[in-house]
Length: 231
Image (tube, rainbow, N blue to C red; front, side, top):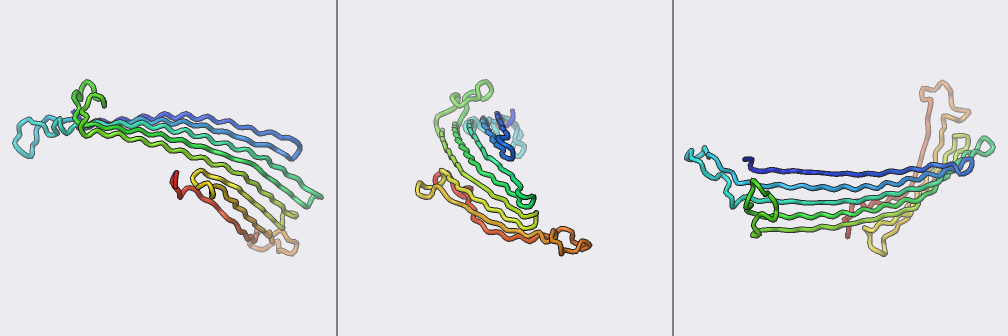
């Protein structure tokens, strides 16, 4: 008989849907939704082992006694959904001024449940290796339930003149349940400017660098990953 048997089973179901539509010329709507369920069941039984311990007297005996046998099981379930929607508008004016504007929202939610139980001394490890067929002495039961949610609004404006002078403005307004009520939402702007000097009329066409752009940017970022669920 093996000293231990372990089994892990994971079931994952994922559903996705996507929508893209042109509302008017140059204006498009994009939306997507994802829902996922993941179930995990695992467990192990530590069996008693009867055999010959060749380090001592070569006579049959319990190498691992029944009193040291045990069993544990755990179960987890995780539900997650994510939704995104944004509109995008592109327009060229006078064949020189190019504009691209995007605005949207996103949200997601996650819930996780976990149950763990263990007992020592299995009564019938061959026929019924189950938790309710093991001793109550030293038993342990634990439970964990966490959840989180986040949402945000975002936008971006891109402008360029003849593809030479570039401007990009970004903004996000995000909220997360990981933060306290008074600090749950934050604003994160950014700006970038660029100059594609290789497109200028004075730029030598036979120069060994055929594409050259200078870019400068500034911005603020937020990150919830460094926090626990209830920090």
